[in-house]
Amino acid sequence: MPCIAYFASLAASDTVVFEVQEHYVKQSYRNRCYILSANKVQMLSIPVQQGNKKVIFKDILIDHSQNWRKIHWRSICSAYGKAPFFEHYEAYFYDIFEKKHNYLLDLNVDLLTLCLKLLKIEKDLLFSKAYQSTPNLGILDNRSKLRPTIDPCSILNFKIIPYNQVFGKHFVSNLSIIDLLFCEGGEAPEILRRSTIP
Image 1 (cartoon, rainbow, N blue to C red):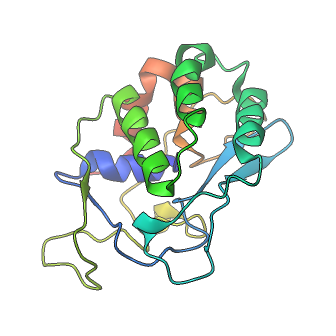
Image 2: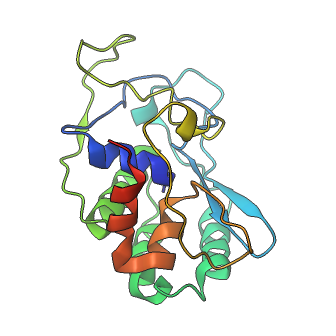
């Protein structure tokens, strides 16, 4: 459930190819997202096996020895239970959390597919067949640009349009896409569209 800028980038692209052949990169949106809880911005991170070794992303296994699914779902319910559109979308996300995926890629594909559907973004999910350190001309390479440690406004044509959030007096920019969906519902696609600068 990556950040809003991630989905703005997807929506603005003609064709999207997800990199699945590179070595797993720690501290990326591949296994984490940020939500707004009552006290602060909270990171939800999915534990993985062999995340410190050179393992190709498509082969990364989720570590189910930790009770992360229950903890994440409880955190999401606590943060967004009173959001205007939480009950509209809750069951869709809960069903995915209950699947107990073995591979991180499979979980990500299910969540991305759901979010794209809810945002009314029609894109085929294509996957890389081989790793290329430098993609062909004409291809926008966002692999290292869309990371939690980098402000997307500084590198992409992106500026989030503020919307009503559940907690806090000050708007918190670029949280997980679920923040926008649970808070704005059917208006989320338009906010996303307006947040992309042509």
